[in-house]
Amino acid sequence: MKAQFSHMIGEAAKLKPLEVDLKRLEDLSDSIVQDFVHMRKQEEEMRDTNESTNNRVLFFSIFSMCCLLGLATWQVLYLRRFFKAKKLIE
Image: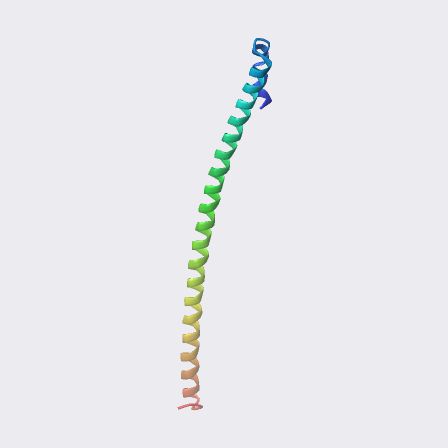
């Protein structure tokens, strides 16, 4: 901010004090607008990252549940065959 304004010190002697203040406020408002644009861009990137992570967690959860159900089914079938072979159940 000061770097932008410091190059105008030579011109500042030619300007009225009110014009100097006006130019300083204009530079300040431009800086604020640029900061808001940067923040909005960061917010969009963070939202995209969060949505991507959310989708990955969802698919991983579905995959985990399918694996759990598959292993539970296999275990029941295996134990049923085992107990039939030992003639503990009919």
